[in-house]
Image (tube, rainbow, N blue to C red):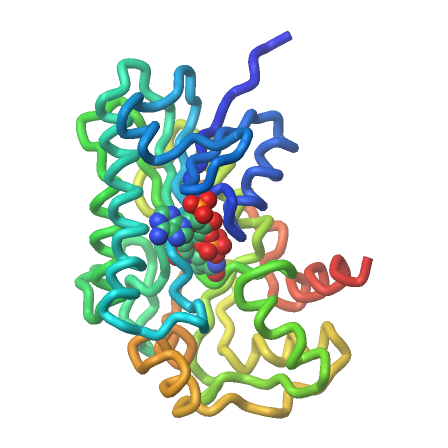
Length: 302
Ligand SMILES: NC(=O)c1ccc[n+]([C@@H]2O[C@H](COP(=O)([O-])OP(=O)(O)OC[C@H]3O[C@@H](n4cnc5c(N)ncnc54)[C@H](OP(=O)(O)O)[C@@H]3O)[C@@H](O)[C@H]2O)c1
């Protein structure tokens, strides 16, 4: 019997991480998690620093990071520091462990966000677009990606700039489910802002694609090919639920609840194309928002 290939996943306990662990297991991979919490499959960040990578790791993935849109947390300097450190320090720790490892994994795959691109209604961004950091979150994305660099190392480095990840049990859908269910849902105003998105299964498939294709390096835009606005998303979600999408969320309210910097993640948007992803031969299971919403909501009725 052939040996299981092990993937080491930092943040494997989170919304994306737990789906990714299940998906990779189903695809024949063994999983080891790096977490701040003890657990049967978990190693700690201190273990990583002291002992380095476990032996025979085929791939390393980092999807760790303090939740930026945690409504319980005020947008203070201290919270911003946690958000920043949880991404940059974890990428740095993993990159350093890979550089030191005598037997390298095949690939180091990380996540960052489409927030690296400045919101603009007219510019189309692809993976070759210039990025320069225009606010706290975009500068953080730049540092996040830089922290993962392992130049000169015999290990591929891939980063997925993810849009909003859609799945029933976490992230944006979990927040919106009840308001829409009770007919109180609607777009975030102005509604015309773009909403780059991806179905969770396609994001997991994209990570697998990065593991299994030896020619993939660098940045990929982790977004669906269908470009939609926030209002179009609300309509698709409400339709899939057989509910109206009538009650809009005013921008000023989000500015008050989240702080203006953070609220821009919802009130502004970028037109992001997955050009390189498609050129590399990746195909989507959920390319359209109607199909994605239907699948997600069907599952929740089981
Ligand atoms: N969800 C989305 O729509 C989306 C879109 C684009 C990018 N991303 C990025 O993808 C990553 C994962 O997102 P997610 O939605 O899965 O988040 P999540 O559910 O909050 O999980 C993130 C994981 O990161 C670890 N973590 C949290 N705070 C940390 C800290 N201060 N230091 C070290 N580790 C910490 C936690 O693992 P332990 O408790 O086990 O340590 C947690 O399970 C984040 O970096 C996020 O910015 C997410």
